Image (tube, rainbow, N blue to C red):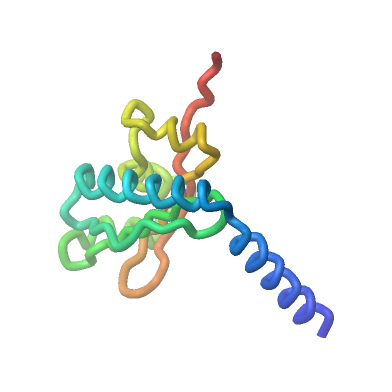
Length: 136
């Protein structure tokens, strides 16, 4: 019972936090989503990958949802299901915008990028895009 109460309180807190986004931050989010969507759509390296959506999933996380076609690339599909999480990160990296593409502008605005690979209506793997810290 206590656990259910905590979940309800956490859900309300997330709703309140997300609903109190400033108009400026919301506009930044829309621009960031548009940029990421255009970048990923133009740069997907494999025909077995399809951009499903790009959304602001929470506060400052931009989620890139990718669908993996079992029909077009059964080996990739199987690898994503069977490889270790660390080994799967290499595959996630092919979707992440390159650092010289303008991704640092998003990072400077405190956005982070999260990639989710799905297939057969199931999540296969997910992870964040990793970028080197730029020192000034």
